[in-house]
Structure formats: structure tokens, C-alpha cells
Image (cartoon, rainbow, N blue to C red; front, side):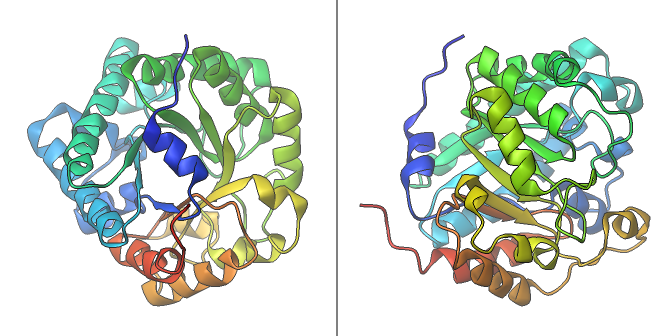
Amino acid sequence: MAHSMNSNLKQLLTTDRPFLTDGGLETTLVFHEGLDLPAFAAFPLLNDTKGRETLRNYFDNFLQLAQQNDTGFVLDTPTWRASQGWADETGFSSEAIDRINARAVSFARDIAAAWGEKGVPVVVNGVVGPQGDGYVPGQTMTAEEAQEYHARQVVSFATAGADMVSAVTMNYVEEAIGIARAAKVAGVPVVISFTVETDGKLPTGQGVGDAIALVDAATDASPIYYMINCAHPDHYSAILGGADWTARLGGMRANASRMSHEELDNAEELDDGDPVEFGELHAAMMRGLTGIKVLGGCCGTDHRHVGEVGKCCVKGHAHAA
């Protein structure tokens, strides 16, 4: 299944001005919008008009920031939980989940078209989440099992016309390898995003650089770049200085809170940190990183945080020649 790279994705990969993306979708919907998301799943909102309107308003806030900062935007599908293993917990059949993944791409395409007319280049990104908990690598899969498990969702995205897919909040290497291989077979560009604990290491205790090296070795370096997400900048900024592997790091989506994953899981209220400090911390991290292509937020962040990241990290970037 061949998948030609569109001009917006080419621009993302070649510009020296990072594209923006959104913040913490699920935490915004739960804590700011007061929505109940069973299994932390946002994808059911695509099934009704009010839900789609809520998602549309959410993304429009961030796309406005991209327009203000004169940059592109990576538009994620709200499908972090829309893989087959979550069917029972979310009350959807396997076929319904297939349909919702296709619908998620067409929903994102509509938004991309509207903002494209306003001069914002938008990359439609099919989001793949972990088969298990995002924070705890409980029942782990082999790379082969992970490829088989995730192939169905990846193929749904590729067939529906996503520009790329991203494996988000990956907490162990074998699952990341499986998704990268599934994307290669489906002919769609893939990004792998690892999460880290407060010590800057994966929940398995592995270093990010080692994890990237293992995925690259097992996939002929097929991911177009890697990311770190769902951790506060203080948790991983120390691992970025001068390491060779950071040349493969193309994006960051940090948490607003300094809490550990366990503390966040048990939090009754949203810790949204300090948006201004959040932007400044990103500016400090960016000084040694040359390959960053995407900046946004994760748990607890909203358009205020991403707006500050835009001010601190994008305004100063010259346009690519």
C-alpha cells in the first residue's frame, strides 16, 4: 500500500520552524469541559454532533495559535484509545472501532481543509495509543504480537488517508517496534513517542537513547522521528544535553505538572502548572536541540501552555530557506 508524502508533511520534515500541535486533549475534556470519558477515551465524541463540535472548538483554539505564530500544525486524531483491545471497555464492537478510526481521519481532514484555506499547513496524524496502560508496562507484548495487534488501526488510518501515524505514550520498546513495522507494511510514515518517569527513563528503566537505538535497529530506522511525551520538562531535560540520539528527537509534548505518573493517576484535581514557566522551560531545552519539528503539550496543558511555547520557541525561529 504505497503512501506518497504530501507537501505539508514534507514541509514539517524540512522546515527549521517547528509546527505546533495541541495540548492534553483528554485532561481538557475531563477537567475543563466536565465530560466523562470511560477508559479515558475521546473517540466516542466523534459519533454525535455535540461531541464533534466540542472537539472542533478544542482544536480550533490551537490552530489559531499556529496561525498567529505563522507555523504549521500537526492535527491528531482523538484515537489514543481506539484500538481493538479497548473495544469491551469502551462499549464498541471491533467493526465500530474500525469505522470510528476512518471517521477520525475524515473529521481531521475537514478541519485541515478549513485551516489550509487560512494559510495554515496541517498534517493529519493518526494517533495510536498503547495496548495497555499508558504509564505501566504491565502485560507486555513481543514485537510480533504488537505488530499484529496494532496493524488493524494503522491500516484504518492509512486507508482513510492520514498523512502519518504516531505511536503515543509508548512505555516499552517491543510495542514501539511492532507499530513501526505495521506502519511500514501499510506504507504510512510513522513517529514513535516514548514516555518517561521522573528520572528521565522509560517505565522499564531503559534510557530513551537506548530505546531509540533498539527501535531503529529493528526497523531499519523507519520512524521519521521520535518524540517524548507525558512527562514534565524537569523529568527529562537533563538527558538531552549533548547526546547523539537527540538528533532523532523531533518533538516534545510535555505535561504541565511535575507530578509522577502515579500521582497524576490518583489526582482528583487538574494540576495545570504555570504556562509561562512551561514556555520558558521549552526555550531552555530547545537551545541544544536542532531537529525539533513538533511542539505541543500533554496532560494538564491547554492552549495557554502551547501559546507560551509558541512565543518562546517558534517566534525566534527563522523560516526555512
